[in-house]
Amino acid sequence: MNCKISLCRGRRGAHEGRQTNGFTLMELLIVIAIILILMLMAIPTIGSLKKQANETSAIRSVQAITQAQLQYESTFPANGYATSLSALGGDPKSGPPTTSGAQFLQVDLATGVKSGYIFSIGNITKVNLNGVDRVTGYQVNAIPQTVGQTGNRGFCSDQFGTIKADPAGGTNCTQNLQ
Image (cartoon, rainbow, N blue to C red; front, side):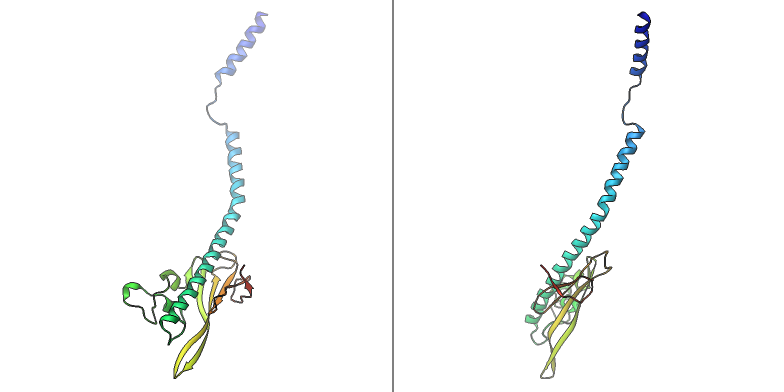
């Protein structure tokens, strides 16, 4: 009996001397593997959120350009609408607004590139009144810089203000936005 007690004490003493402070290597590898799996699941979600944010920014920018066109047309009625984004932009420090720099758009949008989209004004329609061309129609286009990466859809609007989308990312806008 004495022998059994001493063996038990010996084992217990050896086990008690091995105190662990922290994690084992296996536990750390398991935690790292779980973190990597979660990151791999999150990366596609982050990419789609970025595209969605770019598309929302593009829609808001098309609305801003349309609003700037209305302001331009009412400020310069003899000219009608602007034929370029640079005419809607301009630096307020450069002096009063002019037909070539009306100062209605922010500088970044007036350059034509913002949040992964390229903006332009096209499909200009004009009428000639007393030898002067007056712009009566236009189309604002917003297309992704890289379809599938910076955005999936293209957006268009005209002088009537309706924004439509092209699911292929171009300027063939046929779908109304919901």
